[in-house]
Length: 108
Image 1 (tube, rainbow, N blue to C red):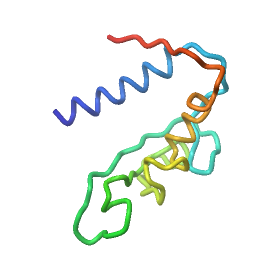
Image 2: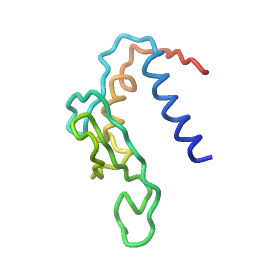
Image 3: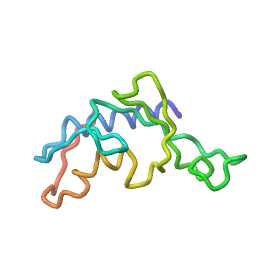
């Protein structure tokens, strides 16, 4: 079940990126807001012991790998729900563009 969810998430993101039709500048961003060719985020499960007061304890921590750091996972200091996360910075033009009214999705 877990691997199905991961595959579904990845497929949804890929489908969204390639089949949405709108005119905004869109590209992958790192945590500094700089363009990167690609990135992968892994949301780390909630770790209850020994991580009190951290993103690891509340289940919002993530690790990432990008075209700037291929082959090396880096634990982000940001929460995956933060506006400073890579995912939020990448999706910012879509989420905050008031001119974009509709999106088209293809379900395979």
